[in-house]
View: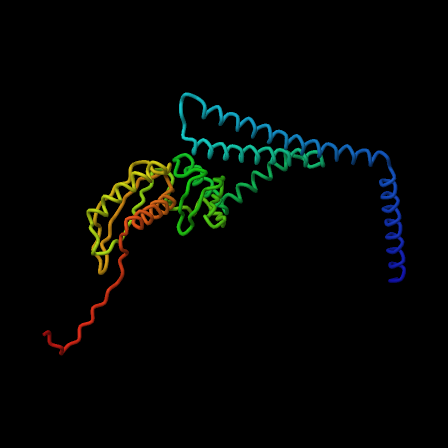
Length: 302
């Protein structure tokens, strides 16, 4: 009985296998099948190319609009204009790519109506579990709407400091001065320090020895600051020589305050120190140095 059942089962399998391979052979050798595959491939390629062309044309048009907006009589903040343009470009790219995928799936044979209905239900289910994603998007919107920072600004978020390279729908990318790129979710941005909104203030201290004439040193600093201001384009105002800031153990500290362009205080500080060092050297100002006085108990003065 078992042998009879096994024989019948093997016969059915052989028949099914023969039918399957015969059909596969017919499909492979059929010109109509290959014509259909070729047409489908061409349609997918055309959809992909059209999507790329649409994105490129939209980005070109967007760039042209941004340039015309900058040239218009009504002036807008270029930082904000650049940021909004970048964001709109990303939205256009995401939308075109999504529509291209839907069209390709439709060409392959997927029915879009039940697929979109299922995607709506799936999106609702994901929405409840992806609250952090929604938070990132909403926070990113308010960052741009409130103009907290823009592309090109130097900012600090927690311990991360650098130049903003991109503000996306979900993340913000900043590049540090040493080349690291930090990718920070927008929802985790609680406090931001922006160094690029207003002018910066450079506070620079110089030390001279006690034996030097303080009045003469201050006059020399004023003359030197006038010379530096005339050749340095990062300074907004003539540097202020504030005077004596501190009297230390072995030196008198003089302070200078310079208002300069945003985020240029480092370069301005280095330029001022270099020129002051040269001026002190030319006028033979002695550098302060620590001094030690040894007092021996028990010795009487004669």
